[in-house]
Length: 145
Image (cartoon, rainbow, N blue to C red; front, side, top):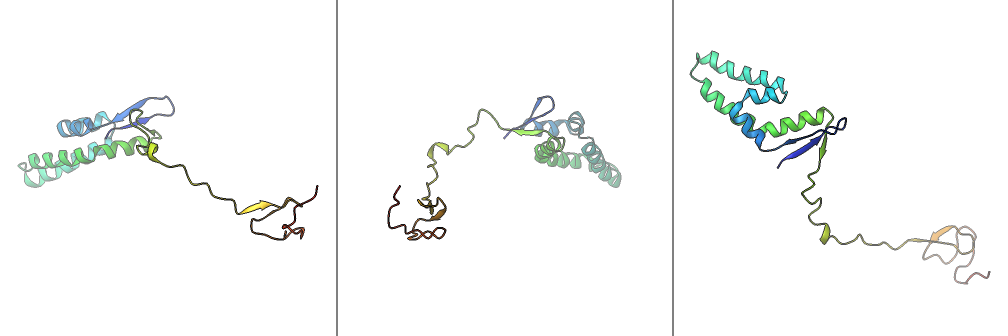
């Protein structure tokens, strides 16, 4: 699923989708450099150079394929973290409904109040009260105005 990030300073919107996986898979460190992930470019180069130097060359192809596949699996999370760390805001997709079950939700149940106002002193008392605890009025009798 693609994610949209909005820069709150200028309103620029950047989308991170499945295309990022293909970019890393086929372009490798070039794609990472284009996206400004310079630390990952250096990590990529270090992970490629270590097996190449250790094996005197023949394992660099296997390492390149494995590293490309690994970065392709995690690039969306890496890019999302980059944008969120820079202060960008995750924007919801306007084409998707916000809550797919919104039409089927029942309204929240209305709770009966556990208190009422005393007709004599206007203080909050329990509904079951027979005598007001504030003014000691008998609540079984109705007030005379």
